[in-house]
Image (cartoon, rainbow, N blue to C red):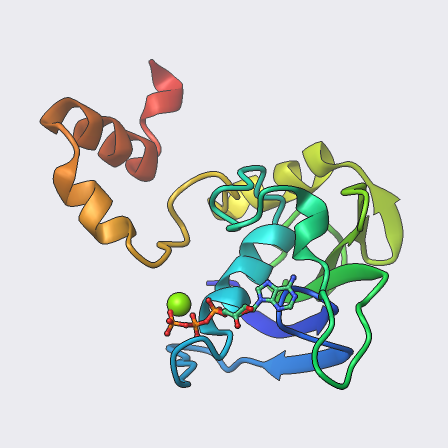
Length: 172
Ligand code: ATP
Ligand code: MG
């Protein structure tokens, strides 16, 4: 298992300025009152891994992900999320003990990805995540309300998801 070591979040949604969240191996839990930003943390992870669906990120436009400012704090010029993944087992095809993926988006919605400091494309990010079975548009991350959605699916649609998850759909 390649665990997430740390998340660095700057100006993303309700996160003003730079915030760090360190995560341990195993189960981690984030608690807080309604509207305190728990789902925004999950969305920050989806965002940096390259999720394309604005609906899943709860944003009409990508630029809406940038912190809009609060009572005392001014709006941010851009949003940036960095995820630091453990890679001691070299499961990600990058010859470093840590893989540092970052994605920055400006108010116009332009995205820029970096992997270990070097500018890369979204396709490259997807390609290094794939050997660890991480797909930003897949089901590694189950968002709020999605369980209800899975229950309401038809049996055919549910079968397709199970085939995707088990990794057999690519052989069809
Ligand atoms: P719940 O327990 O109800 O699921 P939550 O802890 O998951 O709540 P989130 O949905 O993550 O909360 O956070 C919602 C907050 O994020 C709202 O207060 C909203 O105003 C704020 N927010 C979202 N986008 C932005 C933005 N671009 N700039 C500033 N604040 C934002
Ligand atoms: Mg929530």
